[in-house]
Length: 250
Image: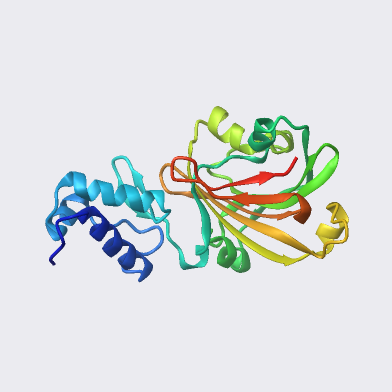
């Protein structure tokens, strides 16, 4: 295998990305060890690490200290708009200094069935918390969402925690950092739940954001589908230092 000397890490990045997308290295698999890849690509350790870092920044892999590099790419998660970082609804509201409220509409404990497994990538039979929440700003309903949180990661979850911030509980109480978040943005017709809870103001379609969040060891612990009020939904893109974010028009 021969590579051009200039920007060699870019060539390695492109080759590894191609192999991941072709499922030579599948979702949640480890890629070959650093030593093996250095030998295969005939490159320095620093060059390889730059390529791996770029793959991580683009949401293809996650490096886990002492364990290697795990593949996060999944064909069903294409059109990913956010790769790194995970601002929660409460964090975004606080950042914009606006009054917000989270109401829990449903709180249950279930096991992942075949249909949910195909949608979420959780293994069948995984115990999860199933939560429906309504997000309001200045007494107007903006978002209705369905959350699935893996019980073995988000331990001892309660309604009061869900009404506050699950992410804050996870990071500050359980000391479980959120390493990577992937979000998909689509649009769909408003359903009966949207019509019941959201102030649609005549709109019949809504932005739908699907969330997949991972811990530092590569475990996907959250699958969330949120339907947003269309007249208050804004999407913007930033550079790698300030990843893509979803913001609310105040």
